[in-house]
Length: 161
Image 1 (spheres, rainbow, N blue to C red):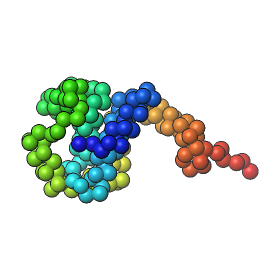
Image 2: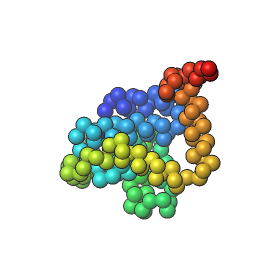
Image 3: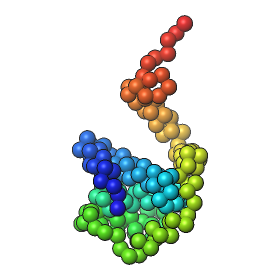
Image 4: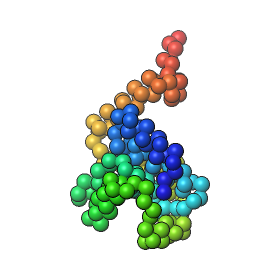
């Protein structure tokens, strides 16, 4: 079950009109935190992300299942079921089978949520996208960094000498 503050942050994101993937990001972030603190492990960064997305769907985030062909039919089917579960009963307890699966995760490595492995996953995922798409994302990120006041200069333009 996701923690209450995570569900609350996702609800706030929904109220602000943010996309379902942004709302689901809260659950993925929580999952990475669980792995890093040693609550359980994951075989790969992809599995850790998938667990977070599954939790988001079951909590009622309207995140569509992955496109057909991009993942195995079993994963697609599971995502559909998670989405249905989120629509019908977002607060339901996990089944016996699902509980046993979480016990299996305890034997998996914790390194899958490390900064290095997540960075490696991000780079490999970016390579699958086109150059134009990557460029647009970079420009958007740079724009929000300067507007928000985060980043290296804290939102200030570099002084020319």
